Length: 253
Image 1 (cartoon, rainbow, N blue to C red):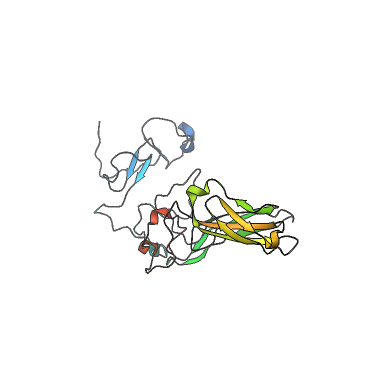
Image 2: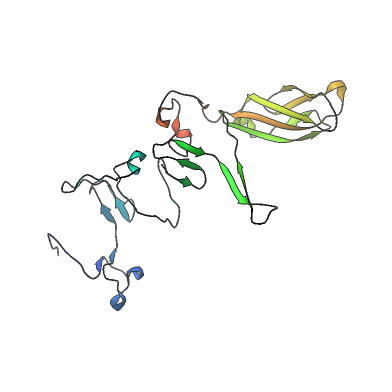
């Protein structure tokens, strides 16, 4: 049975479908003005979702009787106005939040990025922040280094050997021709040099054949992805001339 109504005011409780909703209250304990809809629910353009993507499916506002959707204030400069959904003041997510494209933020996201509403990066640093390991009621924050290339590195100490063994997986991970090596002799001036290197080892040589004892850092650029183009002409990340799908950007730069 179907009822067609121009207007309906529900002063008590609205229920669509079957089931008990503890959050809305039941019977004598019901909350007036509450509603339970079993779902799926479609809000906005009726045909925007070809099938139920979720319990609540919110599409763009296309009702010709309504004024065009528009969020006043700073958010229109966030480039995504008009919005299909707006929450004020706060939104809580009790689980994972999956985002298909971009998070544009006017504040802080997990301490990673701060943007103004024009999309300018005020701070975009990759960091960790933990309780201080030796001082009570202090914290320790370190920030990751950044470079124009997608580098990986290994470090360690070589003692009484003339070779640095590289990880086996580097053969498929890095372009071995980009390898660079930093050496720090321990205990004495050994005049250690890199004699040669390949995709498996770095071969060392010391002055007069002295025993080698040194720390090392070996860097190389990844080959399993395209090389980064550090500088390019444009006004947004969308102007990047390479493959943007290979990058996880923390915000509109």
